[in-house]
Length: 408
Image (cartoon, rainbow, N blue to C red; front, side, top):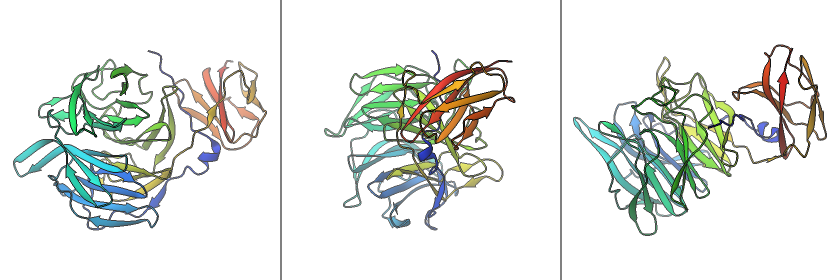
């Protein structure tokens, strides 16, 4: 399978605002933790449960007001305290479940599901999944259904796939993921499709790794799996994920050595082109293991998780990032710009028919080797090795990519 290696930042107009900002940290009463359940409804972000720096699982519950940048303590989640579980919003309601409860020498892998009503701040227990209880599953809502699967149960990783019908409060089993079993995958929903992959298994993949790069789509309309292009970067596990404006996002986590990245890596997925784009890393000296996130009014809010470089830190901050809006890709037949000479030896010249907001050059692995937010018409490529590269030019509302060769 050919990998589409278009790792592009989006429009320069958006990029100017693409800076991480600090918001109000979690309340002082909240134990720092990893694996919190996070979701948003309207102007509010919700934050509950998780595995704390006190090595206990929790059932506390908080609400963040994005307009006032303040936190409020809500009544505790009525289910068992838990970590390694997930939640989501669908049609104005919150849903949460699964994960691991433990106390002393007792533990339980959970298969429950709960619904939260933001009007009453009350939870309702729904039908449990007739599946194995599990930690670290994928959990996505599209097309009136909640899809849950993968994860790990005692002594095994899983690849089963289940559908919860919100209207009928009922479950049914679907075809398994057509790949290796895994836990702590990345996942999100776009339109009527679920996207899931990456994650950590106990079997080596075709790259000889236990942490994977494979990526899949589940169609809720045809009930079929499709294998997509592999993730073009390093395999990864234990980050956070979300979708917005027709795109999916994976943020932070750990690499294929199960250690934090040196930066808080951030990628956008385009389902139309089945390709990934790099975005600015979140602040900090490393990525984070098992953080949380929620999206409000075009901002992603990012919190918690563990930095495992010395010193080990469980975070309580709240950072936010303005997500890019969609711009239109222009095909070769409609020129935004031309480049010459091509092949090029040292200096590449650009002739644009529009005001350039941003220029990027990437190598065949998708690494950005040159970028500029200025309306320039010349780039010195003398220090770059011979090979194939991609030049992308962004205007206010469109972008175009052209292939060049460096030869000497």
